[in-house]
Image (cartoon, rainbow, N blue to C red; front, side, top):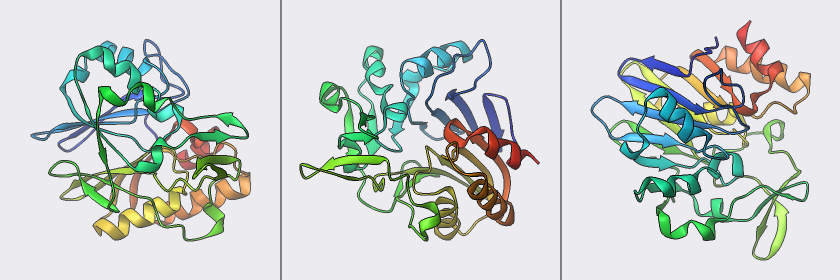
Length: 261
């Protein structure tokens, strides 16, 4: 099932898509992802910040005040998820940003730099380095990762690389974080790019929380995948206890079409 609205409400949780590749006017689109999580009675969490200030412009259009954001969670260090951070420096607030240490590493895709300039913004944020597999952000909002790699079928694209210990090596996205909103009757699972595999992430979430998934939303990174792989992923997702699926950002048109059937 898919949803073309920028806002989704499930129980006491409201999700607002602030940045995506295909938002409808008057909202702006760009290659990137950002999602605002508002849970009644709890602090507000922003998951990723897109590439530029598009998420800030869209927030203004929708009527969301980003100065009320209490915590930011960055899924990984690519520009299309962390690039918008520098534009938050204009809001006059020092935000708490949750991320893993490896998010700061220089990142590349086929020789092209795909990270951001962390040095330029380091003094503008309070970085909270996540070290545990699962961390509680608010009373019912959690970040977890990296997902356990269960098979080569979902290994990250080998064209992604990082510079670690002064050496260019393959990027297995060991910093990747996902967000979960835990509700009485199930969980909401939010992914940034799912570089470690959307099935791996879903299976981890099901094991960690032992509840059905009311909504799976975010990037599934299937836009460059073969139809055979997409079919396999879609088949597995449809076999799991997931009520609603909204593929965004890097999921690809093929995956969106097949998941909508």
